[in-house]
Length: 179
Image (cartoon, rainbow, N blue to C red; front, side):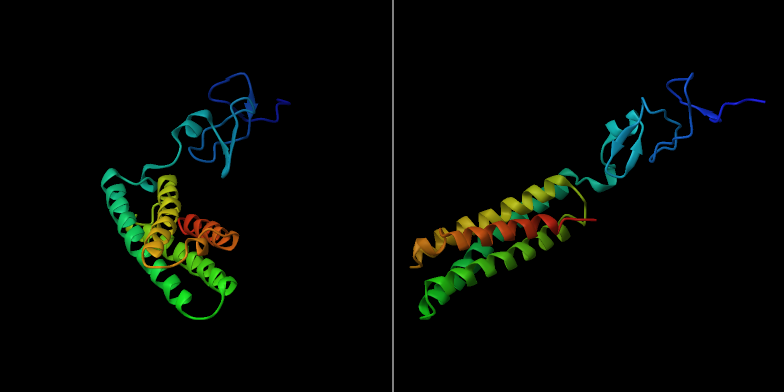
């Protein structure tokens, strides 16, 4: 009768007994081979594979996402500048106008992230997150440039409240790309 408590052996280290399995492929692994990943224990082979192909965007999908991103920058910037122009026309004050601008930027962040997510066919790709965050920043830059051209004071876009709105909008755009 054996006093060995491990019934199985590591595939890479045959002399080490183990009951651990890789969370992806199911191979037996020892603590030397173990790699901790966000979703559990993995063998070295599975850690190097990275994200499954079905979650990555193809080049054609990324092309469509970039075209949609450019369109969002143009139309989102136009929308932001027109909203700010309307706000500036009303006598609501600089501070309230800045808060509403930040709120509009946060809403545009959610809309931008959701649009990029849908055009990207609901993939969980890090590149889509980068594109969605950059798109919202582009909306902010384009909105401030168009707004300056149509008579909105530039300092409405360059105060701390607007920067907080941009940060919240980018955060919301990034977090719309999820499983």
